[in-house]
Image 1 (spheres, rainbow, N blue to C red):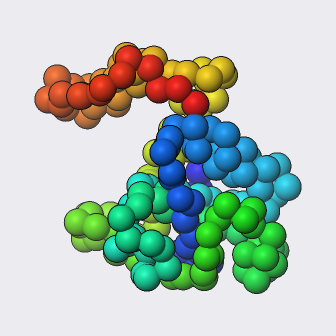
Image 2: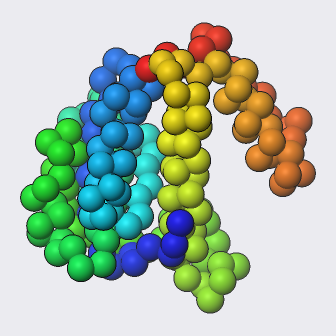
Image 3: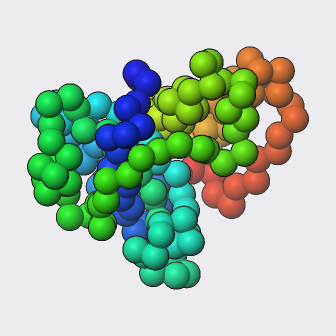
Length: 171
C-alpha cells in the first residue's frame, strides 16, 4: 500500500449492527474490492468508532466502522462520493493529519502519511485474513496466532492476553 494523499480523503462510516464480522465480510469487504477492481480506490483504512468520532453525523449509542477512503488518481472527489455504495453513510471530503497519540517527530520526514499508511496496511491485513479463510468463519485461535506472529516480531509476543467469548468468528 502506498502513502495516502492526506488531502484527498473521503470520511464515511457503516453502521455495524448486531454482527460486526458478518457486516464486514458480506458488505464492507466486497464494496472495497469492487471499488478497487473499478480502479476507483487507491487507499483505505477502517477502525471501529462510536458516534463521538464521527463529527455529529451518526447516532449516539451505536458502533460504526469508520472508513477513510482515497479516490484513485484521476477520480474526482465529488464523483467518487456520489458512486459510493449506500451503506457508506454521510461521506464527506476531509484532510487527514494527526493520528491519536502517534508521535509525529519520529515519523519519516515527520509525515503523518506514514502513520496513515500503516493503518491502511493493518486494515488490508484484516481483509486478507478474512479472504484467506474463504468461507464463513475464522477460528479465534487463528486470529490469536496471527496476532502473536505480529507481536512476536516486535518483541511483544507473550505480553498480551486475548479474551474472546466464542471460539469462531462467523460471518
